[in-house]
Image (cartoon, rainbow over all chains, first blue to last red):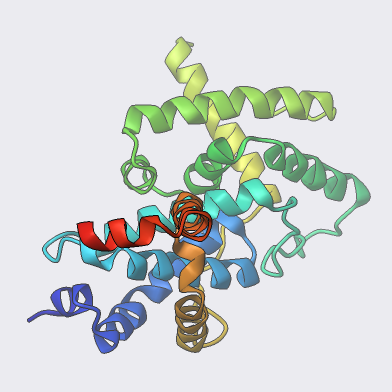
Amino acid sequence: MDVLERFATGDLDAFESLFRQYQRDVYGWILRIVRNPAAAEELTVETFWRLYRSRARLDPTGNCAGWLRRVATNAAIDHLRRARPVEPLESDPPDRTRPDCVEQQELRAAIRGALDALPPKLRVVVRLALIEDEPYWSIAQALGISESAVKLRIFRARRILQKHLQQRGVTP
Amino acid sequence: MTVDKKDVDELEELRTMLRGAIPPVPEEEPGRDLWPLMLQRLERDQGQWFSHVPWFDWALIGAAGAVLVFFPALIPALLYHL
């Protein structure tokens, strides 16, 4: 009996195996969306909890990684709906090659503000496609939508971002 | 310049601007082992099984209880039908 089949019967060891196998991927994916390590940890646990709860309905021959990514994306979107705008990650350092003048800091803040003002569904697509360079097909799978729908969301997000940035005096 | 080309250029400009302000997240692992947290979550939830019972089930149980309290004569009839 393989791990997924054992997990479907409620075997905790099988669940631990799955958890250890996929937690890095799930955590990394969520972190790219929420950009907050503490929240990403919490949402990783939430994602596996949702997997555990629906173990009886799980198809042991199905794509567990794909299913987890989709659940993780939904959990991350739920988090974005509830959460306040994210602070910059520690890994978001200022550009050290040039002195970081006030103007540049203001520009970055304006761009972050415009992105945070987007509805969560559009923000996720922008973060994954334009910042993290994820392919459209991968984003489409994670969101359970078509690639055309991803492109449409990017188009809508772009229009809103341009408007917000213009209001803040930034011309993209 | 065609509309498509202009569109692609605009998107690239936006991408560059966004990535300049918000760099991509580097490949990272969780800062700690998350399995103990997962176990805590499982234990907590198993201890709160009643929180997964929908409110209408509780309402039904309450209504059935109330009927038995206020109309005890129904108990033999109910037992007869069980």
